[in-house]
Image (cartoon, rainbow over all chains, first blue to last red; front, side):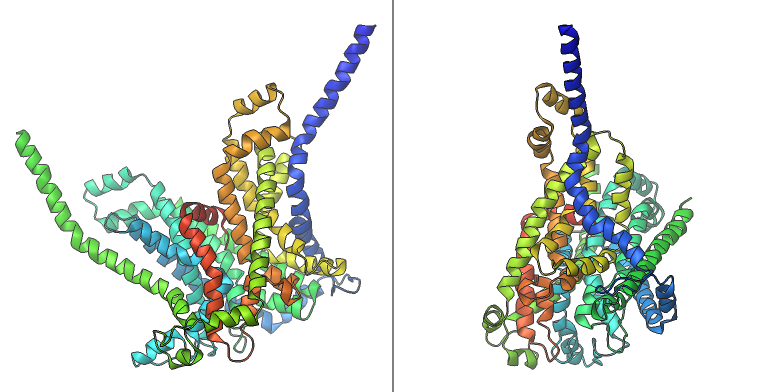
Length: 304
Length: 287
């Protein structure tokens, strides 16, 4: 009898301990997940729901079906923002990845001196915040007092108004963005190059391949996953361009640097049309996913 | 024979080192030239920060008189120090909280089996591909209604739940040997003590990586504080410095002083801890 009671008590204690043990992973995840739910997951889902309403923050949101999406489709300013973003993204992604890969190949090569110092030097701009970098570039692009035009004047060349000319302004932002990101991507490409076993390259070299042949036929194909990663990442950032364009030009002059996120920011936080801005954010999310899948298919298929 | 072989290698080595230098120096020179161009904007900003207004408009390279007027104006006429404090304060608290949240959660993901584990993990991973400003819109509406705009809390919490951070922590935690954990349990060590006293010390390099990732994400963030902070007192450094631009002709000297002062602490930290910085920034894929 006492033994039986003792056994039950023991079992109860055991199962309580088991329950506690089962709860432990949830308790450990709770601080992260509660915050994540409140500030990321919840708003991401809510944004989708709000995109079908006329929510303006104050009054109760009304369900209006696809009206926001129709309005986006019909707004020529949205198409302009999309065209600007696409143009900017195409130039930025191509130039940035080409330059970063070339730089990484140089850093990886046997002939380069001061390797570590050079790597650190190129990475330095990455540590400067985008907005601060944009402010710094005021003194590069400014008409009259900017370094670019001082240099061009000294050389007797024409001096465009880098931030004031609608045809030129987007190039100024591309220059700033590439300057800021080059070291970052070079370091990622460099890490990819380091992962390629050097005896592969050595063997090819001993077989009489010239250095550029080794690079073109051996190194680059082996580097393809890294290239794909960098292209997708830089495309996502290109599509999300906001900080520099907002600081330098506020989307102007004449909407020539208007990007999708600036369009979204103006709709949401200047006109406080939160439902409409939510719809824009989901159009952009959709574009980002499509771009990533397309690139993966294009580059991935070629790989086979 | 031996002598011949030795001679031979020496010969080939000399030929190699003869072939190497010229190309090597030219190539290095080219890369250094590009690096010099890349460094120019920073150097130009430093020089301009020490120029008087008339020097700036004269367009000279070197300041005629090295003046600290711009820095004095910046500190006296703007809320710069307050913004610097805000930025540092929220970045440090976010980092401490975030490293704690991510390591605790990453440990649970790596070393425990529980229902819903896979689903929760994939939700976190999938959220990375959704642009961050999607969250800004509803949060702005909600926080405005709750009267929580303009609070430090809003600047801290979103950065403490970093999806990349928990992912990286999970990767590192997988490497913690199970035998060590079992030994701790047999010795009667409680589960939290086990995390705190055994797992956390083993994660030290990962804590640095994730810490830098979170710190930089908070320090550099722009659209979030831009939307959420409404009074000048509560601005962070990027929002404050960008607001100095104004609508009229900018005070270039003061702007450059602000941008130089703002990047200096991070550049110094980077030069001291290059390895962790590069790891934190490239593994976390932050801007």
